[in-house]
Image (tube, rainbow, N blue to C red; front, side, top):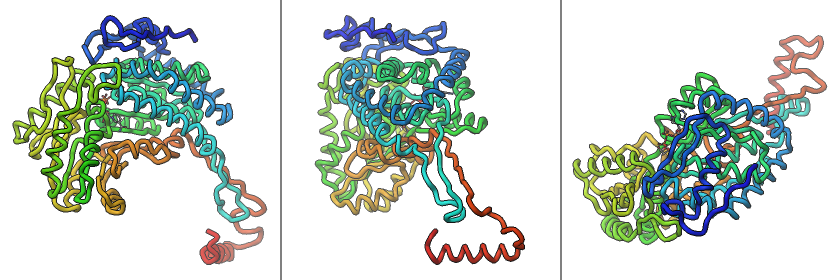
Length: 530
Ligand code: NAD
């Protein structure tokens, strides 16, 4: 491994890099593990100036990356799980120690404010620690009850799948690049990963840190390129695919995985609801709504885009929520000063603008925001609240993936639950109440993979011991918890039959055997042995 150029303490000449130097960017670009001859230049969202030029991986080099990864995986899987866990624990420390460079990189590539980038640092450190601590015991062979008590000794083993393709989006550059990869590596797999090109530098930074923490060369391959160009090579080489991105791409990944009969975990889009129940604390709910709707300028899969408020609180809530939203500070800065940053690419700005304009044209009212802010940067858009959105508006059902929320009144819990569930998606939801029991009752009836009570999304996302993922069009499979690790393994059952076969004893006819087994089954039920 070559040494990374250091960061600078003064902002770069272009003002889009924080403490990151052009030399560090150029060096990171050389760390793409499977580089082709072509290059691609990314733009910095804060200014749309060129940010970095990266080598693009051809389908051929992606195929070669799988060969390298497959070779490296054997030795990695042969190491005791505790050794693999130790690498993750060292990575945990390095991420915390070197966070400044990562924060700058995430902001430079994605345009988000520093406070949202910091959440990714905590997420990745906690995920590394969680799987390092839990992995060895989750992966241990387990005794299972066998066919005949006392005679059948059964054990469940978990073998790594082999080489996992991880395909990730640009919205949470570090969380999405490293979170799922950590679990796949802990389970003894190698990974060939395609981050979104826009945020590949952050992925490369994490890759370098994991190498420094002791991950052997070849085990984690990073490739760069568009889905249309190298997607087929990724799908052809993988033993399992972990995809995070849009529902449309997820469907096509699922089709390809089905054709090859490999497993796929799909973390897709959402149109997440928040319910402010009649007994909610208004102060907490207003602050919660701010945290729910506008992190990373709403470019967060679990952020809230539909807000249902009980009639009795609606006027007060909307007035206060709009006032707080107007107070949010927007800007480009490599410190913790701003509440809201920039959108990441021009397509995002077009979608947000189109959704707001369309909603207004079909009868909606803008309570806060509602306009782009080119004075701050080419991709800034104000946090926006709409009321009176009709079912004719595109944003009534479609995911905006931007700083846009529609607020609706309701009168009964049943109505709020029906409105929350009136969606093809089912990723995340948020419920606000002063009664834990009331909150749990409502939460259990919402069709979503995670429901937070008195928090927006961080309570469920951060509960790393519990599964996280989508229902309906929001996906298939789960990350986090035991599911998030064991999905990267093949379960194998080894059953050892002792002393007596599962067949009539020598000389016993089948009639007697059937009667003996029937009696045995009745006995098992009566004695509660099984
Ligand atoms: P996208 O589907 O366009 O792209 C995601 C990734 O897939 C990128 O790396 C892209 O290059 C790659 N890709 C695209 N087509 C491909 C193909 N045919 N084969 C292989 N790879 C391909 O999604 P996006 O617009 O970049 O991301 C935003 C979406 O992601 C939103 O819908 C958001 O809700 C969703 N998302 C979901 C989660 C979650 O955990 N559920 C997290 C983050 C983002």
